Amino acid sequence: MNRFWRGWRPRGRFILFVLLSLFIVAQVSWWMIYQNRTGARIETLQQQIWRQQIATAHQWTSQHEELPADSLARWVGVMFPDLEYHPARDSLAITAAARERLAEETTHVTRMFAMESAFFVVIILAGMVYMYLTLRHEVRVERQYANFLSAVTHELRSPVAAIKLLHETLSAGELPPDKRAKVLHSIRRSLDRLHLLIDRLLKTREFSARGKRVLNLRRVDLADVSGAALRELTGGHPEARERLRVSFMRPLPVVIDPEHWRILVTNLVENALKYSEEPVEVELAGDGRFARLSVRDRGIGFARRERRRVFRRFYRVGNEDTRRSEGSGLGLYLVREIARSFRGRVRADSPGPDRGATFTVRVPLAKGDGDETADPRG
Image 1: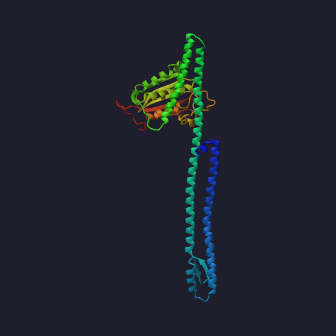
Image 2: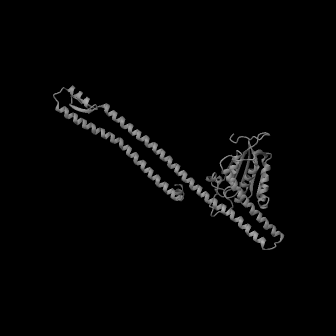
Image 3: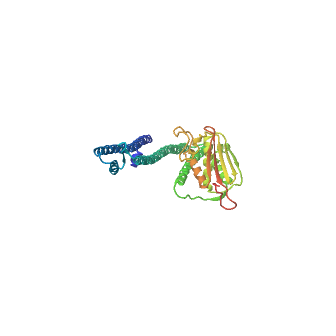
């Protein structure tokens, strides 16, 4: 069954879901109409029985007119408890108690059917909502998977092709020392790019796996660790170093895993440099009981509805087929997971498309000289 379901494309699954939903709604509607009619049929059937009883009793009393009126009334009461005989008018009628009993029974049946109908409607609607959310989740996962394959394929192909071309250049013959140095530098950048992608894939697997993650928590000055991460990032990229506007407050004692924090800072700053040609502002300051890292760029930005989506695995703003920027859609996901591992939070803000973005990470400051940290939930 699972193999059969996976064979359907998202559009086919959606069409099947719509058809099943319409069928279920039609069935429930017909059942509700049928149950509503059942109460009316009960009342109609009882009225017919009373008419037959009146006809039978009237025929018997007309054949025994010589009997006293009280005897006729007693006989009618014994034979037909729902009827009463009026000697003065020589007529038969349905008792008020019988009419009230019929009304109560009809109301009870109608109420029972209404409650059952409401219960089934709630259950069916809950099932339909669950099916819709599950289907939408599967479609989103498939789209993210396709984006991931497209991004990773591009990320792997580009540096490998560059390394191959540069290797051929070196193998072609002797190069002047300055050109040889440039070629080796380009090879190093391509290798760094491959290493970064593999590192992100491994970290994504680590943070996505169930169970407790192993963190090397230490008390450090966040400014020192962040500065080291920036120097490592811009060590071989002087053009990137010139675009950074750094403002650090010292000291900011925190208890973190320095290696994971390095990945967090690298991903945020690299993401800002990638999507913006303007200077990128990196600010580190104290914020009450928290240390706050803000990375602000003036790049492509994003719509308000994208604020939470940008932290999903493999999610990237735009179309993978037409995107020119590098990336695998894992950087911001790792930023969120790493921040959470330190009991911190990350927030993304943007005034709108093409108006830049700001990413803010808050982690609790260490208390005193120990390794305890403030609770971010306050």
